[in-house]
Structure formats: structure tokens, C-alpha cells
Amino acid sequence: YRDELLQKIILICSQNNFQYITNFEWYISVLVELCRMEGTQHGGLIANQLMDVAIRVVAVREFTVGQMALLLDNAHVIVGPAAARSSIAEVLYAAAWICGEFSQLLANPKATLESMVRGKVVSLPGHIQAIYVHNMLKLYAHIIATAEEEDDTEMIEEVTNLLLERLPVLVSSGDLEVQERASCIVHIVTYVQKCHKNGDKVGADLALLMMGELNPVAPKAQKKVPLPDGLDLDVWLNDPPSESEEEDDEVY
Image (cartoon, rainbow, N blue to C red):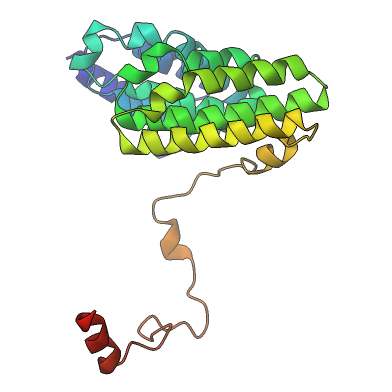
């Protein structure tokens, strides 16, 4: 019954691009409250709504980021004994993504990064661990770029050492995607550390990799894109291999 009620609340609030919502802070607060519902099977639905509002409604984005930072800080409550019987951990996927994508709106980026690297992350499903790792890099890039502007070498050392200390456990993850992402970030952070020891500033360049804002795209938007003149999808882009080449490949 509770799951059905949750689904109806979200369905009513989100229909026709949120036409019935006049106070989005209220809606975000309701979604966060719904995260506390034990045993729910609609964690993914809540997560999608959080991400949708964060992307579409710029006016409430800072408030949303603040709420997501609180969710990450209290992830141990969400990933409790009852989490195995529900999908509520999916909201942490949204929280990590939102905090990473809009890291410039965080009140305390370092505290959020610390929340993301705590031991509980390894108990999350693989796809959520992967999004955690990817957004750790976004947060790290923002923190490093800001610290370099302020000549805060202590902050740079702290966050660099934090990742180099905590990421190896994710490099050993049983999920290949998590392994790959964690391994890449370890090498990036190690390179940044080396550059700083040589007196080079790379924060702005690193942050540039994460620059750009995602805009909402309608599911049927691709159909509205006109085909370029002269485009023929039935024509080979490159000449197909000859029969003799195919025979040679079979021999080898």
C-alpha cells in the first residue's frame, strides 16, 4: 500500500512537466522524506525525480544540492539492514550524481567528498559505486581548482591524500566498472600530486574536463532533428573489403 501511495504521489506531482508544482523546495523535501520509507521498491523512481528536478529547475538547484549532500552524509541510515529488501539505495545514485554535477553549489565540497569515500560505499550495488567514484573526481577537480586559486596548499594535500588512501579498496572491487573508474582516478590523482610537487597548477585544466551543463532532452527530441542534406545511410562510409582480403583474413 505504501509503495502504491508513493507512486501515486510522484505521478501526480510530475505529470505534464510538474504543472501542478508551484513550490519545488516543498517537492524536493517530500522526495527526501520518502527516502526514509523502509522497504520501498520505488527508490529508482525517487532518484529519477530528484535528478529531473535538479536538471530542469535551476531556481531550486542549490537547495536540491544541499539536500543531496545531507543524504550522502547520512547514507549509513539509508543503507541499513532493511536496504537489502528494498531499492531505496538508488537515491544515493541521484545524490552522488547531483553533488558531483553541481559541485560549485555545495556549501562544503570537502565534507561531501569525505561522505562519499566512507567505508559504507563498498556495500552499495556496483552501479551506484561506479557513479560514486566518477563524481568523486568531479568534486576533487572542483576542490583542487578552488584551492589553487586561493593558494590553499593544505586543502590540496588533504583531499589528494584522502582519495589516494580510500580509493584502493574500490580498485579491488568485484565490479569491473568500479575497478576501471577507481583505477583511472587513482592515476589522475597521483599525476596531480606529482604536478603540485613540481610547483605546477593543474586544477583549472582538470576542472575543464567537467565543464558544461546538461540540459533536459525530451524522449522524442531526436525525431525533430532534420537529416543533413545529402546524407545517405545506405552508402558505405568506406569501401567494403574485397573477397580476396576476406580470404586472407580467414587464412590467418
